[in-house]
Image (cartoon, rainbow, N blue to C red; front, side, top):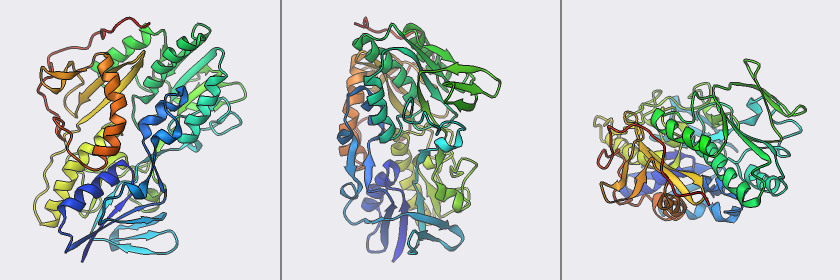
Length: 423
């Protein structure tokens, strides 16, 4: 019997297991899914934990409960991928041979890569919210906040969910206002980018929102070190940003097993064909989600869209057919802006986020690149969709792997989003 091995049971790996379980001839193929962590987190939910909108139990499931029947799940660490021998060495000495390998090992924050970050201030007045520990600690810190310099900071790109730090800034503005401590708080958004986002259209809109909420943006800031004693960020150019509470996004890296296996770039992301999702190292290795080096957002929606294309290409590879360059970089995400409003963006490699309706032309009901309450409720509803549809690889009506241009005003330029009064 031939074997497919999937490394990583996060979003991408779980979706691929569900898709392949339905499509492969199980008389000829077995599927094994490997992960060392028994817990699956709904990572977008980490954003809401600091503000008391979610609790940890709201974003947690057992991975074993999410694996489709017929897929073998091994709870084990991954020591090394031996691509030349078509096998994976697990912690403890077990070896898994494979005919096709799917790498879905994701991305992780790596605060040790940033000098000074793991000093005395870590999880005292310096927090991330990309981990359960960081999000829960930040919730406690915000409960005691009475004002001062609140700095939201991105160390370097790429990061998981690149709009999340902006969302945190917007939600902090709302939450502090509701608590009556917004006036004595100065919020600063520090980014290595030249603007608020990587895409100009969207960056203009999000930059306007930062201005409207009186959040100072410091662009082009390349972190050299954190000085926890003086409580300041220091850039390579000598610029300094003081903080009383630092909410930071450390360097994001691929899993260390990628480095041990010699399959990654300098950040341990796997060089991948951006359209076929085949590894550039070996034809029988495919990559999905955050583990890839493709120039697109590291987000759950991307893993979902990629998985559809990757499944087809994996089957084509098995049957000796030419791969299809089907992945167009499709990504979409809701951006919480506070006061029960959100912006929705939908884009790909070639098309910027623009205004329009989603998922249906004209009818919507969601608005693109504009604030609305309906977008906010769409963001909250996505948690149910994630657990019940997306991870199980069930169809999402009107939303395909390739980005649809229908309903989009492709000739529009970014402008200030209209929204109801923030009260």
